[in-house]
Amino acid sequence: MADKKRPELLVPAGSLEVLKVAVRYGADAVYIGGEVFSLRAKAKNFSKEDMAEGIAYAHAHGVKVHVTANILAHNHDLAEARVYFGQLKELKPDALIISDPGMFTMAREICPEIEVHVSTQANNTNYETFLFWHRLGTKRVVAARELSLWEIREIREQIPEDMEIECFIHGAMCISYSGRCLLSNYFTGRDANRGACTHPCRWNYAVMEETRPGEYLPVFENERGTFIFNSRDLCMIEHIPELMEAGIDSYKIEGRMKTALYVAMVARTYRKAIDWYLESEECYGEHLDWLRAEIRKCTYRRYSTGFYFGKPDENGQIYEDSTYISEYTYLGRVEEVHDGRARITQKNKFSVGDAIEIMKADGQDRKVNVLRMYNAEGEAVEACPHAGETIWLLLSERPEAGDLLRVEGSRQRA
Image (cartoon, rainbow, N blue to C red; front, side, top):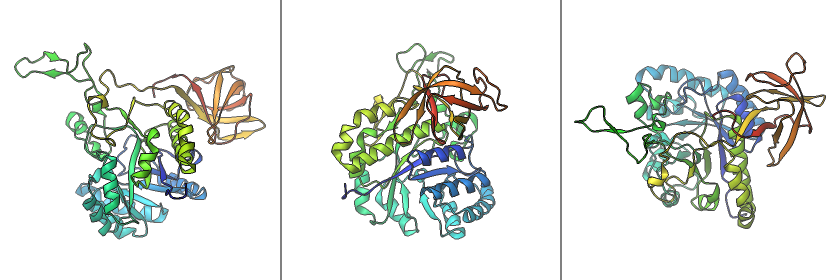
């Protein structure tokens, strides 16, 4: 489809392993966080050495790397931030994602050659805000998640043609404004806006009337209370045409805390959706059933379209529980193949004789049987019960290095 601009597929990576998976499974760009200032304190994140390796790996495969530094900084953060931006200048990522004006100013001063993208944390809800950041030298702004497609189209019409709009199109949604939440800090003293969120939006709540202390009233007709802040996950896999018409330049997937399997499954599905749509609308339509089925193989909390088609109503929440739906379990990534055997670092238990799947980057999945299994010392074993073990596998079909192994069914909570 020659008249349609190809959007960027921007995929999260919480570790070097996941970055390599994102690259293999279809990302045009990945976004990562360092060990400071990245709003994901509990993610593995990237050391300086891992970041250097990850950037080199991505660039070697034609994929860009964006680094998050999007905390709301306090005075005592600024000296360390200067040092950090100096390190990033040496590492040469393609962009920095920043929300705080002070951090933005420092980044522009210390590493002006690196693009600065304005984070959704900055509450970017109108075209004058986009123009404000453009005048300060930014090329891209991440739209607030509270915007509709109609509002995004209007922003596109009012900003310079060379300015880019980045939007979240898949992943978890939180009860907050543009990702800025106070619940965690209020309840636990751990600030979500500084990367330490405890996810209280997923907790079970009841109401207590002031004059009747200790008497808890369910907010919803359910004897177990209700999860009143627990939003559905965003999913726009069925709406690629509408995203394209809105003029969005970068389709962003949420999930720097997610596993390699999740990242691979989501990236591969959206990669196919975008490519099929660019081939033709008919091609995309013909594959919609496959896309719907694939995206539901990912770990998720029931899907919605967020704010894209108007403000969510009561159906945008999940009231019964806060658990994920998980149809597949991650077994490991094939790190090398030698003499027909595949080496993995095992993630979940499986055994000789099990039927598993090789997940390929091209969209195909191979059902295979585990014929033999060996530990790191080369001794034959019947199962691998301990996560993190080095395991060599002989499968009924030879995999390739970089393939992921999975099994249908949830063997542990995601």
